[in-house]
Image 1 (tube, helix red, strand yellow):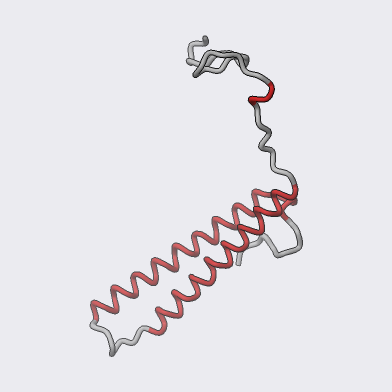
Image 2 (tube, rainbow, N blue to C red):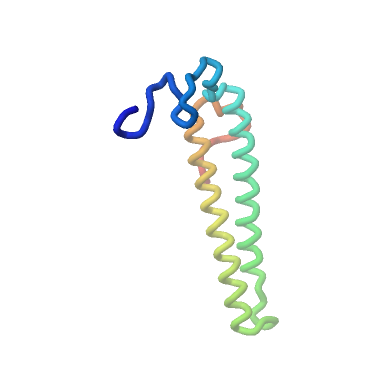
Length: 114
Protein backbone atom coordinates (compact mmCIF):
# COMPACT_ATOMS: atom_id res chain seq x y z
CA UNK A 1 0.00 0.00 0.00
CA UNK A 2 1.24 3.50 -0.78
CA UNK A 3 1.39 6.37 1.69
CA UNK A 4 -1.68 7.93 0.07
CA UNK A 5 -3.81 4.94 1.07
CA UNK A 6 -4.18 3.64 -2.46
CA UNK A 7 -3.13 0.17 -3.48
CA UNK A 8 -1.62 -0.88 -6.74
CA UNK A 9 -3.73 -1.04 -9.89
CA UNK A 10 -3.95 -4.83 -9.60
CA UNK A 11 -5.73 -4.90 -6.23
CA UNK A 12 -9.09 -3.40 -5.23
CA UNK A 13 -8.51 -1.02 -2.31
CA UNK A 14 -11.83 -1.87 -0.61
CA UNK A 15 -11.78 -5.65 -0.81
CA UNK A 16 -8.11 -6.43 -1.24
CA UNK A 17 -8.94 -8.86 -4.04
CA UNK A 18 -7.29 -8.80 -7.41
CA UNK A 19 -9.06 -6.96 -10.20
CA UNK A 20 -9.95 -8.64 -13.45
CA UNK A 21 -10.16 -7.19 -16.93
CA UNK A 22 -13.97 -7.33 -16.79
CA UNK A 23 -13.99 -5.03 -13.73
CA UNK A 24 -13.23 -2.04 -15.97
CA UNK A 25 -16.04 -0.38 -17.88
CA UNK A 26 -15.34 1.84 -20.87
CA UNK A 27 -17.54 4.95 -20.54
CA UNK A 28 -16.10 6.79 -23.54
CA UNK A 29 -19.10 8.35 -25.28
CA UNK A 30 -19.78 7.25 -28.81
CA UNK A 31 -20.76 9.78 -31.47
CA UNK A 32 -24.36 8.49 -31.27
CA UNK A 33 -24.38 8.92 -27.48
CA UNK A 34 -23.11 12.50 -27.90
CA UNK A 35 -25.88 13.21 -30.40
CA UNK A 36 -28.47 11.76 -28.00
CA UNK A 37 -27.15 13.87 -25.13
CA UNK A 38 -27.18 16.93 -27.40
CA UNK A 39 -30.84 16.27 -28.29
CA UNK A 40 -31.70 16.07 -24.59
CA UNK A 41 -29.73 19.25 -23.84
CA UNK A 42 -31.45 21.08 -26.68
CA UNK A 43 -34.89 20.01 -25.40
CA UNK A 44 -33.99 21.17 -21.87
CA UNK A 45 -32.63 24.42 -23.29
CA UNK A 46 -35.84 25.04 -25.25
CA UNK A 47 -37.92 24.38 -22.13
CA UNK A 48 -35.79 26.81 -20.11
CA UNK A 49 -36.07 29.50 -22.79
CA UNK A 50 -39.85 29.08 -22.95
CA UNK A 51 -40.19 29.32 -19.18
CA UNK A 52 -37.96 32.40 -19.06
CA UNK A 53 -40.13 34.01 -21.76
CA UNK A 54 -43.30 33.17 -19.81
CA UNK A 55 -41.80 34.75 -16.69
CA UNK A 56 -41.16 37.97 -18.62
CA UNK A 57 -44.70 37.91 -20.03
CA UNK A 58 -46.16 37.36 -16.57
CA UNK A 59 -44.07 40.19 -15.17
CA UNK A 60 -45.22 42.51 -17.96
CA UNK A 61 -48.84 41.48 -17.41
CA UNK A 62 -48.89 42.28 -13.70
CA UNK A 63 -51.67 44.78 -13.15
CA UNK A 64 -50.63 47.50 -10.71
CA UNK A 65 -54.27 48.30 -9.89
CA UNK A 66 -55.34 44.73 -9.17
CA UNK A 67 -52.60 44.00 -6.64
CA UNK A 68 -51.51 45.51 -3.40
CA UNK A 69 -48.05 47.11 -3.75
CA UNK A 70 -46.44 44.40 -1.62
CA UNK A 71 -48.21 41.70 -3.66
CA UNK A 72 -46.91 43.10 -6.93
CA UNK A 73 -43.39 43.40 -5.49
CA UNK A 74 -43.52 39.80 -4.29
CA UNK A 75 -44.75 38.48 -7.64
CA UNK A 76 -42.30 40.63 -9.57
CA UNK A 77 -39.41 39.30 -7.49
CA UNK A 78 -40.59 35.72 -8.03
CA UNK A 79 -40.89 36.17 -11.80
CA UNK A 80 -37.50 37.89 -11.99
CA UNK A 81 -35.91 35.05 -10.00
CA UNK A 82 -37.55 32.48 -12.25
CA UNK A 83 -36.28 34.33 -15.31
CA UNK A 84 -32.72 34.46 -13.95
CA UNK A 85 -32.78 30.77 -13.00
CA UNK A 86 -33.96 29.74 -16.44
CA UNK A 87 -31.39 31.95 -18.20
CA UNK A 88 -28.72 30.26 -16.04
CA UNK A 89 -30.06 26.86 -17.18
CA UNK A 90 -29.81 27.99 -20.80
CA UNK A 91 -26.18 29.02 -20.27
CA UNK A 92 -25.50 25.67 -18.58
CA UNK A 93 -27.02 23.76 -21.50
CA UNK A 94 -24.96 25.83 -23.94
CA UNK A 95 -21.80 24.93 -22.01
CA UNK A 96 -22.79 21.27 -22.06
CA UNK A 97 -23.42 21.35 -25.79
CA UNK A 98 -20.08 23.05 -26.34
CA UNK A 99 -18.31 20.41 -24.25
CA UNK A 100 -19.80 17.61 -26.34
CA UNK A 101 -17.86 18.87 -29.33
CA UNK A 102 -18.45 18.09 -33.00
CA UNK A 103 -19.92 14.63 -32.29
CA UNK A 104 -23.02 16.37 -30.93
CA UNK A 105 -23.80 18.13 -34.21
CA UNK A 106 -26.61 16.22 -35.86
CA UNK A 107 -28.06 19.12 -37.77
CA UNK A 108 -30.84 19.72 -35.21
CA UNK A 109 -29.67 23.13 -34.20
CA UNK A 110 -26.87 25.40 -33.27
CA UNK A 111 -24.91 24.93 -30.07
CA UNK A 112 -24.54 28.69 -29.79
CA UNK A 113 -26.49 30.64 -27.19
CA UNK A 114 -28.92 33.47 -27.85
